[in-house]
Amino acid sequence: MTKKLNILVVAGDGIGPEVTAEAVRILESVAEMGYHEFHFRHELIGGVAIDAHGSPLPQATLDAALKSDAVLLGAVGHNKFNALPPSERPEAGLLQIRAALGGFANLRPSFAWPGLAVNSPLRPEIVEGADILFVRELLGGLYFGEPRHWDKTTGSAWNTMRYTRDEVVRVAKVAFELAQKRRKKVTSVDKANVLEVSQLWRATVTEVAKDYPGVTLEHQYVDAMAMHIMNSPRSYDVVLTENLFGDILSDEAGVITGSLGMLPSATIGGKVDLYEPVHGSAPDIAGKGIANPIGAILTAAMLLRHSGGLEQDAEAIEAAVKKVLDQGYRTADLARGDKSASVLSTQEMGRRVHEALNEILSRRQAMHAV
Ligand code: IPM
Ligand code: MN
Image (tube, rainbow, N blue to C red; front, side):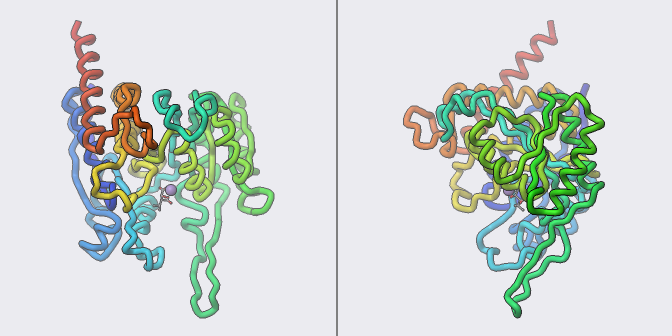
């Protein structure tokens, strides 16, 4: 079955363009081998868009995004905008595109790759077998709540953590439905011992859980959860969080996976699904050709799975990544000073995954031919 997909690529700032180029090469290969038609269009977002058009989300980018089947984003953010208020920074472009596309459930899988256990700062017997899927609510909470303001005359500032019951219901359903296909456990994260918003969150998730009797629900406070996922990452299956808690815990989960540079994400539930690696623009290493492209490559796999319905191709990409890691290839972030590791550049890592993928896909084609 061949597939037609119009993909908008917004590579953005910092290491965004370097890692996204590798992800696009992988998608091109999948298209070629499977006779699919993937059309790529490129537009600006973030700091590069501010520089070129004075806006972090130019109208042309937004229009192209709404017309596409999927949006593949690299990263946004640059230190040179640090003095600007949040509404004028590169990050505002990302929040605006998220809101415009409407995806409210941000899926962030964190998986302990067997080959990387030796490079993890956690002991291998702690991380081995860990496989967590964070479902982060992406359109509510402190990120979008009003009022928000920094009053420089009085020296006070405020943001609003706000959720409606409906916003919690819709994201909780996504978490329970995904848990049904996995190990049937949802851990809902909140701060219900202090915050009213979290009390609403907890009560609502508890209510939604009644429709999923086969799934076990547990609640954890966010501070305790930050510790538990390091102590016993294997105890968790689907972890459901509000926006900010999910932002924080998913970076922490990079430790389980070996590096933040490994983590992909997919945002679903809106008009057009949005795919972005979890790592940011990493200005300190941008342009050096040393960034890890695997987060972006695995993000491309999520795109094929969720927007393309191409599960087998998504699995082939994941298998290619596994193979390359098993062979001992590492980018600098993964090697962590391991002298025996073969440390590759961004492009070399991309090429290794590409080669492994082509091998897997050709073998598959040969099997189908007989
Ligand atoms: C992420 C990022 C973004 C977020 C920033 C860049 C706005 O940290 O996707 O995790 O906070 O959501
Ligand atoms: Mn983040």
